[in-house]
Image (cartoon, rainbow, N blue to C red):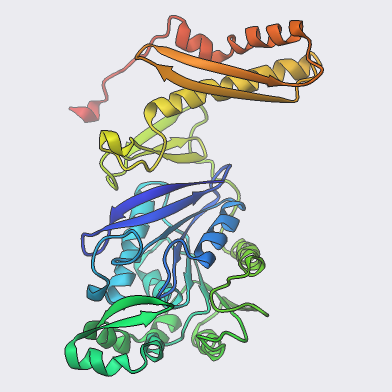
Length: 391
């Protein structure tokens, strides 16, 4: 698995910061994760569930809502409605890069948000709520005596989960006006409701109300022994395992193969200045430039990819030869770097206590015979036929 930083414009124009968890192999499905009210993209639940799903082939984007974490904007100017709009913006970013989300996952108030956002993201086939309130106004009880100050002054600083947040009267008005029951009844997507019976912040009664309001297909899973924030790794892992098994009934989790083998396509995402979406058969990744060159560092740079191609080809070629000749090679490590504009330094480390000097010399010779090495050092020709669409 690997993750990459993501930047994209939010609903109000502010830059939102996210983290895209990518599977080590092919992407089978794409999901969008909405964190809880006082959390962020790097909360325990968001991080662990996203990583567990990535291990099962699901690419997951989690991000900080406007005014939270590393995202821009002022939290005091946000509402539940603006959070839903941020989710739609995140879905648009995925649509333009690795593919629109077919799964929405929301934790706590994020669960209420994904229930509201589902109708605005047509590609969504399955929605999952974790410890979600049935009514958005449920979060008012977290504000305690500050509600009166907010209503009197229009805004107040409230300490939630040990951190100060500026809550506006517009936020209160907005959560009171949401008709979640109607939304849930008209969801028209498969729904999985997950809730801990002893949830200390959002009672399990909320899960019953969500489940009763929804139409089939719907499912409920009890998170026995878990707390609201899923701070125990085992609980987050269990959620991911059950989620992946359940969603497989509604989404084909077999690796996608919608690209021609041997053809690499690169397109601008417009989510960051230099960010590129790279498609290689069924595989997808992001490429970018570092901040020093004006990029967002959301993926490897062009020369990083070039060195990676040479390094992987070298390692694979050495391994194939060693196995074919029954050479006791335990591990291959290739380290590459650029030296000036026209030189690549390739350090090959061969690990194996029983390797003879002759065998090591031969493996070093073979390393320089890998197809990528030959292509880069041989008479390589690059043809650039003009596409009629370019004018």
